[in-house]
Image (cartoon, rainbow, N blue to C red; front, side):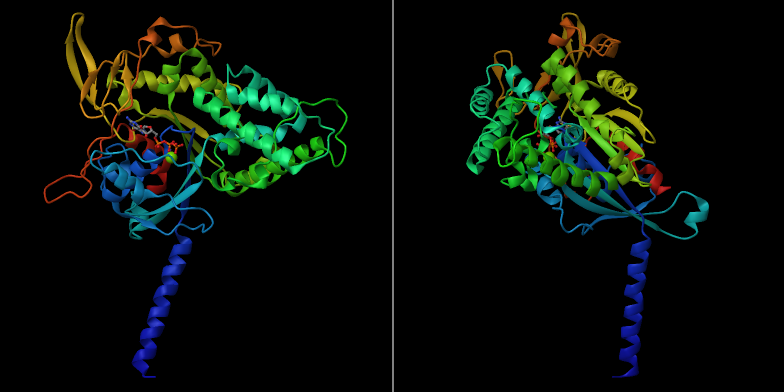
Length: 491
Ligand SMILES: Nc1nc2c(ncn2[C@@H]2O[C@H](COP(=O)(O)OP(=O)(O)OP(=O)(O)O)[C@@H](O)[C@H]2O)c(=O)[nH]1
Ligand SMILES: [Mg+2]
């Protein structure tokens, strides 16, 4: 071997060792993005990544506004066992003609964006460009609600779930499951086929209850609704059974089998999720579709308040001491609650939406005590699908929004075809105190009946701008959310 070859190879080895070393020293920030089904998680993550990578217009995101971001790019994610967030696919759905919203995604996924930036602090700036890995973890909000199961015995959970099923108004699936479960005795022999049939009927009831009232957010267990990679797993083969007596179940009997599987679900599904994913997050954003809850009326708002309360459970110290032991030193220090789809409202109502969200979470926080974590609220639209205008009405000029309602959306008698732009007066959002009173109750509000929101087509985006063309990604307050969630890591 010639000397030159050797020295080349050595230099390369030194270089790549250097790269590995600096990668080890690159801090990573794990951001959890959660929210209930259809709350806007996929659109939010796609928007966040796109705006970081392509340099979007983000005046309230200091590092971008001060032109300190040199480069942001996708890198292979660190955890091989977690599916990658399908960023490119979602972006290409938005770029179709006509543009489409991304398809529903209901499992855990992850994406790593590496950001290279010039530090703002003079001393650090002398050291040159810094790097941070942003690991974004997307998971269903329903899984957070499962934390409550850890405090329940199989019998308590069964009582609750049966009472809930009886409340489901006229649900055929609920009746079918209740009929089946009611015909069984805890003392009959444990048979696998019974467990499977019961679990199928129970899941069908939960899915129908959720379809009939999408805003009943605390239905669960979460994996029965959104199984993720557990679809078809024996860990989901159980169902609630009316307790017949306080004494324990006999070995080899149906009651004992279902109870054991319920305990396995807690030990092998719920706990590992908190240990492996939740406990390793640094920051968290909880996306909330408060406008759909407003559309659903007082009952839906009450359900939302209850669900937010449940979502905050993991942040309450003492309630689950094993969780706090697991969280250890590294624990979520900032949580942002975001009311999504703010573009369904005229900007004159954005502050009210934010204030309503603050009121909703204030009550949830008052009932707990959020150790350690700072909490804030924002009303945002990750991808703005509407424009604003004024229309002349008899009563004067009305602030309206313009957009293309999705095909099949209805307003009174009118059914939209998904092609034509429409001007809509969504109504003024009432003051938050009127919507939620001091007791956290939601009185019947005639004004609320006049507030109506439609779903719109996404806007046409210029994703590959030609010379002189700007990248377009209209949004509302996405930059403020970014500043709160990651801004301090880029100083
Ligand atoms: N107008 C408007 N609509 C939005 C926005 N974000 C989401 N949406 C609407 O909400 C729907 C759901 O958004 P997703 O991002 O898919 O929500 P998700 O939480 O990932 O939903 P799942 O994967 O089904 O749990 C979209 O199909 C859009 O109709 C937004 O910023 N503006
Ligand atoms: Mg999704």
